[in-house]
Image (cartoon, rainbow, N blue to C red; front, side, top):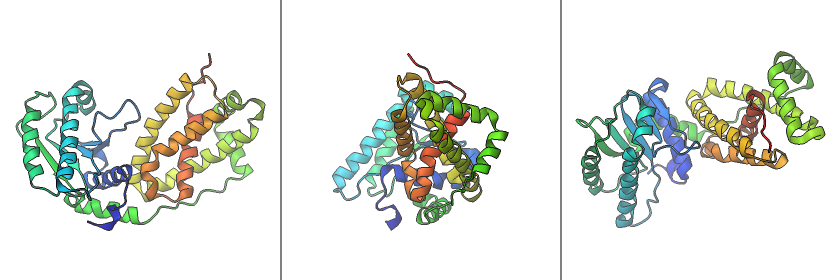
Length: 303
């Protein structure tokens, strides 16, 4: 097995697969399903032509019986969710009919698992799931080798850490930005005061700086790495909803709240950690927090 996948975490494998599949299918034909908002229905990705993907990164060093049991359990558990969440999945897919369900893992080590997939295909069709194309539906296990061009693209990105220089933001830059973005600037001012009161001036200044930096950073990421940019934006949209929910439910919007949100952002973007330098990773965590402060018009709610 290629060394670049040997020491990945489960989340890094998912990020690798997403970059690979986005490249293979193309942006108009590929969707990533975020799990930050009440779960992902057991679906990582799906495509316009009707393929559902689930990623799995088992320990390949275990003995063969244990390996097969783990793979079979993963297949069995996730296929059940197709019926369990039938209504929600159907609404999400729209007019797409599902032609195959694919478990994407590092290596297929046993032909018995192909037989198992055929068995589970028949069971799944028998559950009478509205959005399945019963005539041609398949259950399969695939590896990165099934998508050679996408695999190479993702491997090159994985092996070359992205380190986009952050813009140096001067006082003049901040003044110009505030003059041209009065609504966003007002959001930052109002929310900063709500969180920190009279001590909010330095915090406001930092939020404005990070906001300007993250937008320049994202512009460059979109230009240089559009596939990865799309992934980051998908995760960020789900994280934005999580930040909105937390601010509604939180009684004390203060420094500790800020720390928790930034920490939550860091965890959400962790699966992309091996693609970015440490400085870029930190920029994502606080940068998207600053975007929420500036761009979300919802006020904090207190008891």
